[in-house]
Length: 136
Image 1 (cartoon, one colour):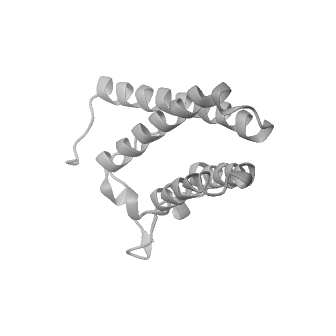
Image 2 (cartoon, rainbow, N blue to C red):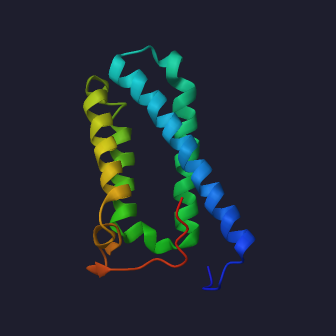
């Protein structure tokens, strides 16, 4: 994406869109967490799983589209690690609760960790500041 100034309406549209996606993602994660941690039958929380996966994929796509360097910054790398842990639900179903808790803790680190950590590039071995960061 070229570096250009966003108009006020465009900024607010993007900001509210990303905030809405994040809220939907958190709702999905809460539903999945309840199901996994309380041992509820999968059919009872499967729609939350779908919501979490769709909204998470959209948020990830948003970040990659905005700046591909997200993939080599710790915030992107740790998101990919979370997906790898999520994939372990299939071969290690008896560890779903522990895996879910690990994913949740990594999520807090990615979302609320210091900028120097989140923006650190594993390729460049230094911080890379993203273009046009739209919080949400």
